[in-house]
Amino acid sequence: MSAGTVLHAPTVPPTGGAVPTMKALVYLGDGKKAFQDKPKPGISAATDAIVKIVKTTICGTDLHILKGDVPTAKPGRTLGHEGVGIIDEVGSGVKAFKKGDRVLVSCVTSCGACVYCRRQMFSHCVNGGWILGNAIDGTQADFVRIPYADTSLYPILAGEDEEPLVMCSDILPTGYECGVLNGKIAPGSTVAIVGSGPIGLAALLTAQFYSPAQIIMIDLDQKRLDIATRLGASSVVNSADGKAKEAILKLTGGIGVDSAIEAVGIPATFELCEQIVAPGGNIANIGVHGKPVSLHLEQLWDRNIGITTRLVDTVSTPTLLEMVRSQKIDPKKLITHHFKLSDIMSAYDTFADAAKTGALKVILEG
Ligand SMILES: NC(=O)c1ccc[n+]([C@@H]2O[C@H](COP(=O)([O-])OP(=O)(O)OC[C@H]3O[C@@H](n4cnc5c(N)ncnc54)[C@H](O)[C@@H]3O)[C@@H](O)[C@H]2O)c1
Ligand SMILES: [Zn+2]
Ligand SMILES: [Zn+2]
Image: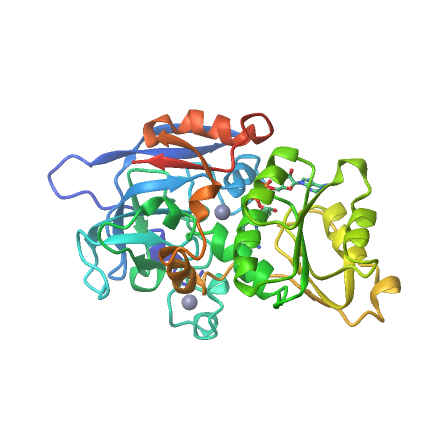
């Protein structure tokens, strides 16, 4: 990050006064975390805003950080990259927002000016990208510092229900951009989404913008598949018996699907996508993979398929906000639990034990 020195500058306490503190969920390394006091962040660059968190949530990626899977997230880091809040303070260079404005925080920080931002590939912004709750302190706190506020925050209208909007920070743009858009879902087409977690379900909700003829959801967890049925899946396949390929081929007349979306992040589920993609179709990978996956070109070379990978750019956030506001989708259906921010340790326990608790997205109220 070329602007690293600016972004990581420590908070400067007001001269003469005590350092204001706040509560934050801090990653301590070795799987440990604590909800503890931390200095309240201050403006360290003219383009920063300080946001008071009103609602935030926990992502599967936060669990990955706790396990040590994300080396850029160092012990001491406040976690969280999703949320809505109220502007508490802005730097002198912030033009689009002022104190008191309600805002949605994007999981991706974009400077708006670098070579990748100019190409709308905010995920690879050379001054930002996915840094929040990773390389810089995140949203699971009373306050968060947002760099490049003008291009990394979105306005929320007065009186709007904020809970469904929290889903626009990460999971909706991820499911939509990496799954639906890259998978080229079209009216009348067939779709399989492997993985019915929050991301797979976000892809299911947004896939319906395009009226595909069939959306088949695959998972091992029957509770999640039942939710998928309620959210519009035309069929569900429980892959616990190891026969998902056969079941999907049967549902598609032996042809396979036009769009195979991978929303788990393990070799078995990507390889399932390779087995079920129809000639001329697309495999759209969403999952974060930590292990190599076999690419069966001996079976795929003549099938005219496309394979895409993508880190969410959040370029679709304005579109998704409009789709939520106009009730074309209701992401509130993904929210299963509510906690106070001060109860975040229990919220993590509930979220991490999803198989037992049935948790999808938990809302934490500041
Ligand atoms: N590309 C991006 O920008 C981006 C952004 C956010 C998240 N992600 C990734 O997307 C993936 C999904 O995220 P999530 O929060 O929904 O995760 P999650 O862990 O909540 O959901 C994954 C689902 O996959 C199911 N599953 C596990 N093994 C399976 C198997 N063998 N067959 C079928 N289903 C299986 C689980 O039961 C679970 O319901 C993760 O890998 C996450 O890291 C990617
Ligand atoms: Zn996330
Ligand atoms: Zn940029």
